[in-house]
Length: 223
View 1 (tube, rainbow, N blue to C red):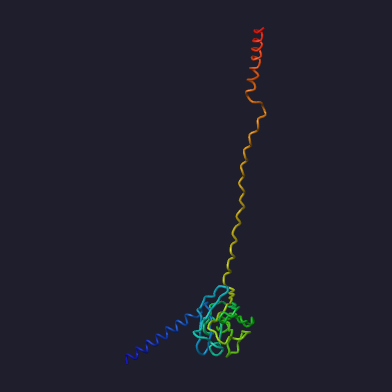
View 2 (cartoon, one colour):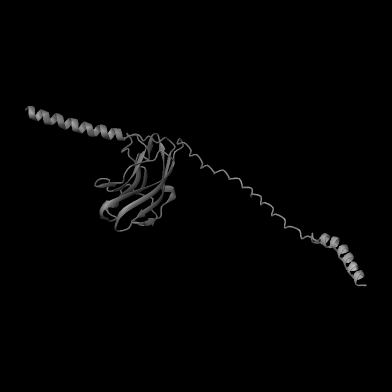
């Protein structure tokens, strides 16, 4: 009897832990991509934080090729809150718009009017987010057909959070002042050619009268 009570108590504690974890996950600012059968197997991408305005991309991969049957009856970008009782932490007025949907790298056109949702009273379209395809509910934002077989679904979406701080514009680097070219030193002037007579001209002129006198003296001696 004690063993049964111990097992029962452990089970209750385990379930409580899961409940606490699920509750703790609610009320965050994360979103994920979900595809599959809402009453069967669902494949989810990693959850990413979208508290800042911007563009995001999510990818979910199936373990085997899916067809347009139950395995692809639901495709949506949603908050991690599971139902209307779990509030998202994204503020009211936040808009989420899916801008692109790809199956195995092939884009499918979307109806813009059906590809956006707004957070109201703490929920994003019942916390199902932006539903791109929900066959049972008759919701379809695709203007083209779902491929017969695919394994990868990729969505690109934008988030506009009115309370997110605006990103500071990138600073424009200050212009570097143009450098003043260094002054080229003036080339030394070439020496001017001398126009005066050579310096020894005066010596020749001074000796010339002496030579004339000597010649006259020699001539007088011959006579």
